[in-house]
Every structure is written in C-alpha cells, then in structure tokens.
Image (cartoon, rainbow, N blue to C red):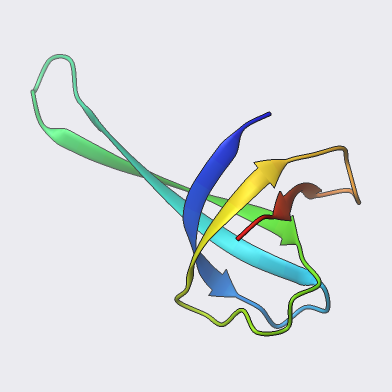
Length: 73
C-alpha cells in the first residue's frame, strides 16, 4: 500500500477531500527541475480537516468511482 503526503485543496464535498500532491524531478536532457501535480479524491470522516492542511493518505480498495484513497492523518 502506498502512503502519500499532500495538501488539501477542497473539502466542500461530504466525506470527500481533494488532495494535491506535488512531485519534482530533474529533466534528463535540460537538467531543469520539473514539478508535476496530481489530485486525489480521498475519503474521510474527520470534519476538522481544512483547506491548506498537510495530510497523509493511504491507498485502499475502491470506495467509489474516483475514490481509492483514505485519510490517515
């Protein structure tokens, strides 16, 4: 199972968060750092999570069509 750390971008849906994860890597030819962002829909029951919080998520069984991750911390 994968554990990922990201930033909460949206919490407007009920029991669902949108978490954005930024990964950076070096371009092999131009030697410039490239940032890639990916957004994950995450299941949660904790109402105290706000936009801008750093959270840890874990891969889990499919909960719905787009939710495959669960909030850990």
